[in-house]
Image (tube, rainbow, N blue to C red):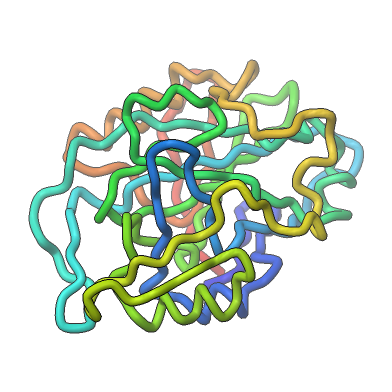
Length: 266
């Protein structure tokens, strides 16, 4: 649940699986319009199995797990109806850029600077647009520079519901307990009006901004990652009403076989 290995031998694991297990499977992430909100728990990962001297680039995006809109009722998340129109994929490149495999394996790869918003008019490239009351899966993509292949990793334990106010009291209490930047209070006794940090960033104990960039870049995977092929792959599945949602994908961007092969979590 917190570790996955690809057919090529690359392994991705959560740096703090215990924290995520505290929240799963009812993890909620507060989303706001103007400045966006940091995700908590943080998305911090460890890589193994990379070629030490080969250069790689790492990306993250958030994908809808299904075409369902949810509601929290009687202590449980339930399907409420058909989901809103699925948004285009918004890749955010890790600010370290292209680095050797040894670089990615020696330190925790952190996306704790990532923020989410639900404002469709917000043009801030630092934010990822999500839809409230929908369920999301963070996806990590890694490509080897000057190669035609990229791999994507999904850890089920990091799935979350995007909300504008906490729905589950237990999740609210966990947030306040574990996140020193979270604040919370009871509104009408049913809904939680707690919010995660806004302008305050967590202590930079883990590497997230070790390059000169101070924020994640909004990017489509650069050459040799053929974004047109990637888009075609996802549109193929989105046309069926929901995005592709397997735990691991191996993409061949040579143009001969653009569709992914699937592998299950370890």
